[in-house]
Image (cartoon, rainbow, N blue to C red; front, side, top):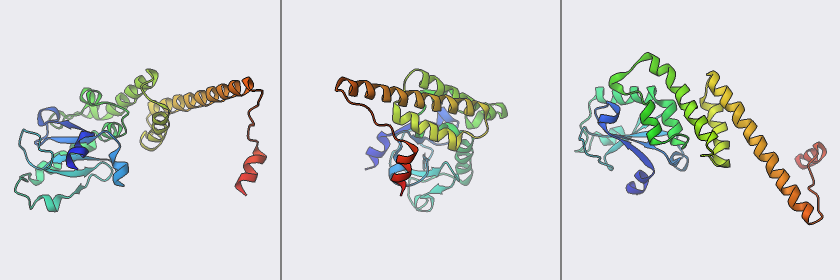
Length: 214
């Protein structure tokens, strides 16, 4: 069970993040199956080797730990309160990017390029990371790296997480226009296919929608 879970998670070692412990980030939307918010997993000790079974979860919404009380009873747990605070700060600093990884909009390598390390925190970096994530998303969108379902999910993600950053609004408009173009293209293909058989696509009118709603 644990091994299957970690197959869908990206791991980052201490030397990647500047944290005193290794960590993992969900990159397969497993949080949806679990019925909880997006989370990262923090190794419960400072050992350099990855220990997949020895972890606690950190929520990316309220930045609270899950399973901490139980983990403290385990022989492998050796983190101090200050270590846990460092992981929380790292999660807050990188929250937008970590959520983007969870929903598969950016990759592990994308994140490494824009990660705000705990030991190299900079106020300018904190302000710029969301813009960098949005730029990466736009690049993937332009490169056709997303399928239709991912584009729809991207629209929802930007609406919920994008905030007031101008780049978020611009990307959202681009996504909406792309979805509209794809929908129109789908309609045209359907109409052309029907014409070959002497049929015609019946478009729904406002009256049709009213009747359906009754």
